[in-house]
Length: 277
Image (tube, rainbow, N blue to C red):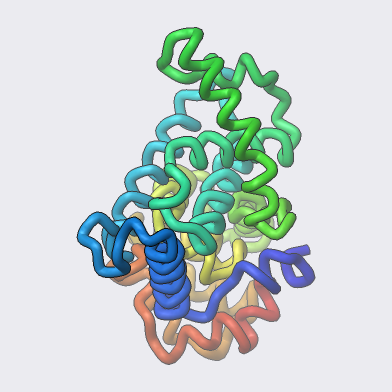
């Protein structure tokens, strides 16, 4: 259960600002560590600023999703979500200046396959790389070398709760308890697109899987011109803290997910969390 998980206790954060502070601290610590060697100064232009590190991480997150999307055999969405979460968590504790994102990206995908019991052999995994046999062999050596480091940097918290299962649960619930929506499946494609976009944001580090899944449903319904207000108030009994209902369906903001408003605390501590957690 997410409510009792390490993800909720250790990897769900209060705000964008907290994440920014963590990343800035990682950047500062690496600069100090490198400067301690005596070869460079802390303000040397060779160092990346936190913003530049964030851009690099975003680029390799996209590369990770692209790699997973064309993987053979087809990679389950839960594996993709787990790999993305590993990557995000790793770079909350480490700098891209110390560990190259490409090899970390591949190691995250490799470890996610194991943890989510997606049975692919090591040669089969690197066979998906567009490299020569020698290049694939070298990549596998690097992946195996970094695998334990990745596990350690994740604090051995390997179980990831993704929004895909609660998303399916909400669809089933609307089919059985919300007859006003004749065909809930019409929401699936747009909601899937929403979840794919969310994977490139910090939403997984800020909100529960159920919150993200419900937001995907609401966003898809809004785009289709369908109101879900009665479903929220009568079926889910979300009769209070109603402001967030509209805020989270609004224009995507910094994280590409929800605008930051005072009312979003209702997600975290109020009745909404009790229903969705």
